[in-house]
Length: 383
Image (cartoon, rainbow, N blue to C red; front, side):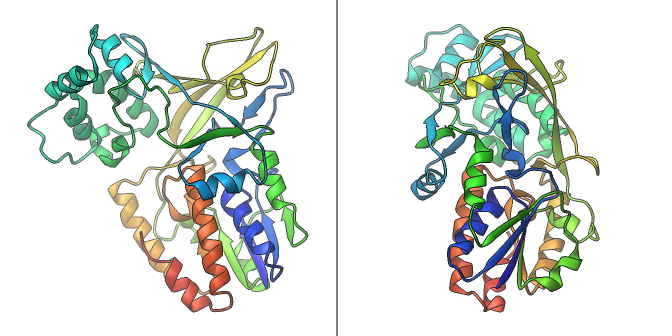
């Protein structure tokens, strides 16, 4: 069976590898970029030799043991804990909000129980069922913490007032009543020693896989393949016939620092609306096992996605969801294509989610291989 996979990021690479190992398929992976690994692409900065995350920081974290063991088949992972700091109008604090943040911000010496009771007392009690991001924040932490840590940052990141965003976004960001400043609440965390590009390159190294870069997909490809997995934007596949889905994109200003340490941490969040950028990343801190005499830092700006921009974050506002459902109905009528990954399914997915879904999808495809109708019914259900 001839399979076409559009996109050489994690979704496409995992699927390609899993299906190639059955020795029942020949697989062509295409990507319109000049490199593999999608937005996880890493390479050495020529000036400093620091491993740069070209499209922004990627710290691998998961509680899924199967996913953790799977990626380690292709790369050695070094332990890494992401400890983010937030710069606000009132000072520099630790994220996520934790006991140190609360005590420092309010000038207190609370123990965990006292801090919990104090934050509860700040809650907006007029809100019973939070309907949006802002209400969820006011319900959880009150106005002072919300406005200093989240309001300005969220407006910069998403380009809309927080009262237009779903409450679920904030539910992913916990308040901790201990001194744990690990940004992630997952069991396994790390960064591949040789970078993500090398990891994905090893995934794609199989005699049944061919990779073709600088290659754009068109529907003319369909007639030459038995099945297609498409990880590009689902609205672009249908030529935006039902409208454009909303995305935010990010841009970076990169600078070389002629010294060993520019900011003392991998990621600093700039929470105030008066600062035009959202974050500054210093990439040498993502590989603390390496030594470099110089450093690079990237200032991150968020903006609405134009037609020439790389889409990063699905906005998923109410209008977007309505448009998405129209595309999902079109997808249900397809006979030999499945939409995969963040762009293909129009969902915010971390790396481990993408890998986990690709592994499950490959199992299902192997089970129903040749029975496209059953496979399509199983896969293309609206979410």
